[in-house]
Amino acid sequence: MNYEDILYREAEGVATITINRPQVYNAFGAQTVEELLHAVRTAGWRREVGAVVLVVRDVPKPVIARVQGFAIGGGNVLVTVCDLAIASERAVFGQVGPRYGSVDPGFGTAYLARIVGEKKAREMWFLCRRYTAQEALAMGLVNAVVPHASLDEEVARWCREILALSPTALAIAKRSFNADSEAIRAVGGLGFEALALYYGTAESKEGAQAFLEKRPARYREPGGGRP
Image 1: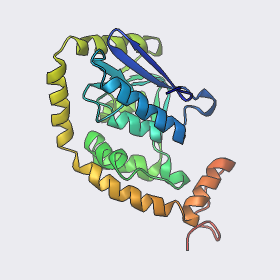
Image 2: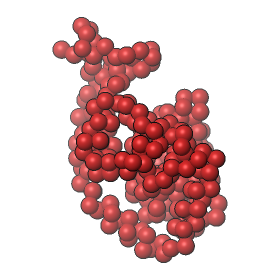
Image 3: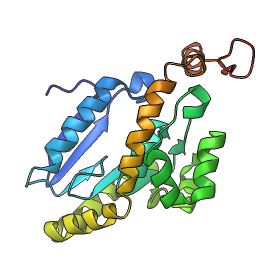
């Protein structure tokens, strides 16, 4: 697959997947998701790859989120589902979906609550605030925060430690961790069916239009989508 939205590199047993859409602050598009899925599957099943830097849950190897800047919305969900996360001191986290008529009704909500706690997860979704790297560390969303210039060095150090361990033991450990929260997948499936219907409503369309026009959504005003 020829990648346009991401960069893919393998070196010394580590696959690094980087979203490369700087013109839109690395915002996701449908093609971005397709490329990420392809790259993750490629890295996940290559025997010579022992660790993956970016994402995701079903890969039988530790996946490290390397966060150098904004992890807002979908980016915040990516950090949530990665096994480990290392952030630059410049990183910023948070959710934005309800502001623009969207939500993640699966791992981005229920699994986030397991990581940061129910109250903090609900705060993130219900208020759509932004959080510094240190705040993300304090709530357990990331494992470490380092100076921006040291981010690559720190990620490489964690990868080296992983590569020194038994790959089969790591794969079993990851499956064991995942088993405890696997029910979220089914709940998320139901949630996304409902979300597909929601996207057809005037309320959701108002959120999307507000995003495109760079203005606050008018959900509760006449004509703003609410009955």
